[in-house]
Length: 156
Image 1: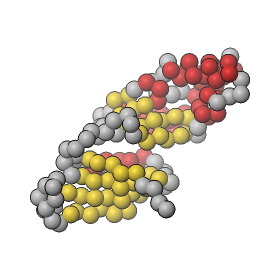
Image 2: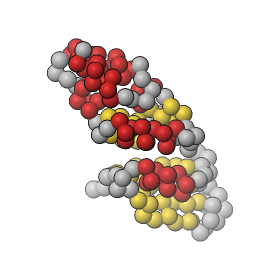
Image 3: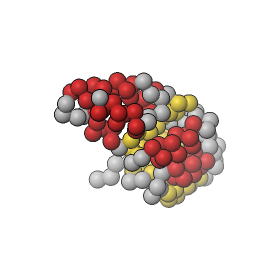
Image 4: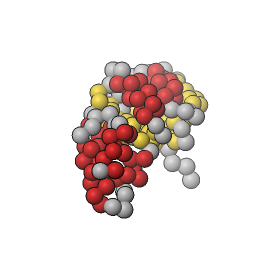
């Protein structure tokens, strides 16, 4: 059994996928197909379908005009090993995008991302509830997540 996420773009699907696969290591656009016949979404050649991977996740995408905009009910979470990686991804996504609280950022196509340090889950699930509370409180004050203050909060 395979599970594949599916993204619907109103326009600029290939540009978005090229951007995404350039951001995340071990990613690729595997195939782009233009639908030659008329579809409910438009005339012949107006609909495109693509297969890609982002890291270890499979995605299908379609460019077929307006339908439902992206929203927070679906996001791509990238767990980063260090602050430099968080900063690199954040900077790229922020270009034309909208930063949001707690490491969330909406890119220029409207897709929501969560850029988080890998250590955050460990710190928020710390066996000492006081540590988890301090880390959570610190995280809630942030827009782009910063590892050093999160670790400082964990230490008290």
